Image (cartoon, rainbow, N blue to C red; front, side):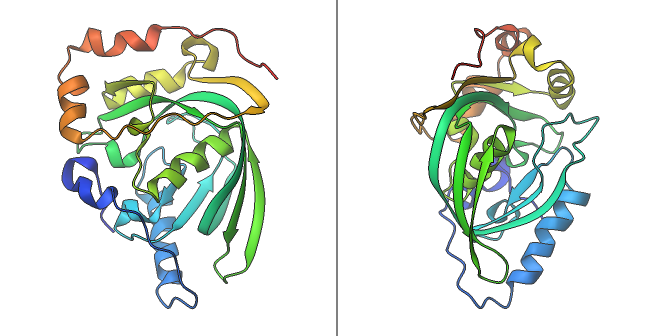
Length: 234
């Protein structure tokens, strides 16, 4: 299944995915498509929303949910399926430099963005048999799931990002290969406090290209050397 990217089909990514209605004869095969892509087609992919692979349904597949690096992927394989998910509670705040397979071009270059996410979320969803379940996620798992959840509503991480930078594939490897503290890639500000969601400001590919991709390399990457204050506030 071909992945949908902002370069090739932004309108498709911007749509609101439809609810899955049980029984759904195509669901099992669509889950396998997501699983196959995560394991075999997407380098550095943690999870995938179905719309990213041309299936506009409210369906997310999570392969793993611990942070790793592109060179050393996480070992916490989950194989979890979330159908018609709803985030019913959000707590705390973190920031994370996010990337997205739907914002990669054919050369592996992409738009990364520093996004403010909740430290903890509670979700309500259906499994592949239609059974309603709930689960609480914390830390990086909550960040990862929030990113995928946004895709179901046509929202990209660059729409919420406090800062954006266009990065070559090799440059992203360098960022994720460093310690978190060195570049403040992931910073916890609060674990239990109120989460204040960032304003959603959709940015088209043309706007991203004009404002970020066409900048000189040294200007693009300058933002990555900036430091945040110390985190871990309750």
